[in-house]
Length: 149
Image: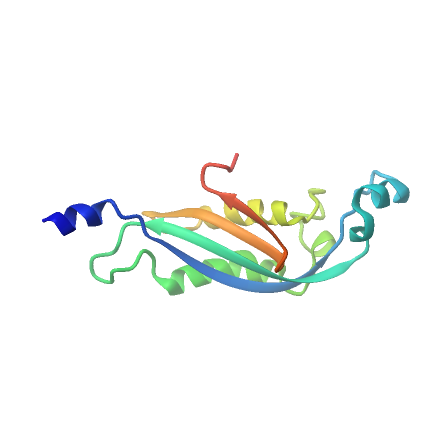
């Protein structure tokens, strides 16, 4: 009985990481070239990144599988919402979310966007805890449950 009580207070999360290669730049069309360079420096030039996106979910264990979520289902969501959407793209031009909407494709904006898309597709009983988007080993952004608008 003691073990069951302790187990009921445990919180388990699962993280799956996917990667994609994409190009972007920081540029606000309404600003002059000089204003863009002053604000964003070298990032105004097109440059690629090998991004990683780590998605962390939580939920109740399925008593049959002792899993939070079926991995093929999670993998399909990540393939659709992240890899297929962003891999081999110039984000400023090839993705409506960042071209037509005029949102700069920063790590922060990508993390927020991915969070919203993934959260909407998770199976019942599975909660999205965090999305972490990293441009490289030195820069990442997190969007966590409770922080979305």
